[in-house]
Image (cartoon, rainbow, N blue to C red):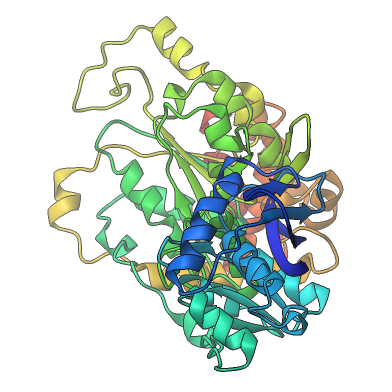
Amino acid sequence: MLSKVLSSAVIGIDAYLVEVEVDIASGLPCFTTVGLPETAVKESRERVKSAIQNSGYRFPDDRITVNLAPAHIKKDGTGFDLPMAIGILAATRHLPAEGLKNYLVLGELSLDGRIKPVAGSLPMALEARRAGYAGIIVPVDNGLEAAVVDGIEVLPAETLSQVVSFLRGESTLAPADPDLDQLLTHCEGLEDDFADVMGQEHAKRAIEVAAAGGHNLLMIGPPGSGKTMLARRIPTILPVLTFEEAIETTKIYSVVSMMGKGQALVVQRPFRSPHHTISDAGLIGGGHMPRPGEVSLAHNGVLFLDELPEFKKHVLEVLRQPLEDHWVTISRAASTLTYPAGFMLVAAMNPCPCGYFSDPNHACSCSAPQIQRYRSKISGPLLDRVDIHVEVPAVPYRDLTDQPDAEPSQDIRERVTRTRAIQNGRFRRSKIHCNAQMNSRQIKNYCAIDADCMRLLESAIEKLALSARAYHRILKIARTLADLAGAQSIDKQHIAEAIQYRSLDRS
């Protein structure tokens, strides 16, 4: 007796179809799974057997062979439990084989027959729609997540018995139907607001410029000056996620099982802040079964690296490729996976090992060679990919007590969104979306400056000993400043302000 059930698995953040073939033949009782199953898949036989028996069905005392095709790709995870159980019941005539052809089935089984959630239900639903299937049967906890995919029926189920009854035609499964408009407009957890930040007007201006142009940012200041507080509020001023961006981000969080219970979409821009002891595999991704790292979890959001010089140097160096290309490639002997990594890098550091260099309220105990060694932990190629360097001094007492309420994040976000719209129109025929991503040719086309601006820039480079790499960075920042001001061309004031944001380039 042979039966076939359609299921799916994930490679990277994309899904592929898996055909679960079940053959029951006469012989000594055994349960064999083939098709390169990993340990979690091999252990399915115990869960499947108990779930079938505890749901009131007879488990066959015969030779059972389960094949997971295509057989040349390793299969991992617990999502094949439910399709295996359905295949066994179909092979023993408990289910009609005709009803299995139109639906993808996925889910982990508990010993009592309940269906538990699995990772990657969103990319699997996308693959089911692409393949033209009528619907997909998923665990209840994955229902809303999979149902954001338009054009396919998503049927959440709680138990094995419910699925069997549905496939027999004895009952129905109510399709999940989330309100996408409500999901995208729902913003929770935005208790962080720039209105809470007293003082630091220069730093807040630099952060607004960075958010408006998608520029990477480095904040330098003594302990307690508010660098982390400022960084945590950057997602509140970035433009709201579009539906396409939300789908991209949700796919990543789905495959690593980081979606909350009942959560359908990631509707807020991610903010990831890994500890400085993180490994290169944790930051970029990797492992025996490669998983996305922090740079991918920060896709369409912010990656914040606090105490930047404390990170291992080889860990920081692996950031260079994703900062340039906005994706990460992980190569293993069996496969090569690519993960998206389009994030905004925000970093913070002290000006010296003790933290109080140039602080008027504390004496610095570091020597010049110590300061030089401390700053040299950040390589030139990595620093070259950070557009804006801003100093964040200690906040005077009067700024904490005498200032009126600061500008809220919502007002800043409106200006940032308006500026990003200008850039989207400018780059609509190219593959980039913001000024920070411009190459040399685009800088030449969109960052033309007049003779007065050229003289100012030349004078700054000579007098401040700015490095050669600062030239293009200043033009990019000036273009963003002009967009913020609604100006068609770059003026001297934009060049002058942009020069201030390249402090680490000065000799």
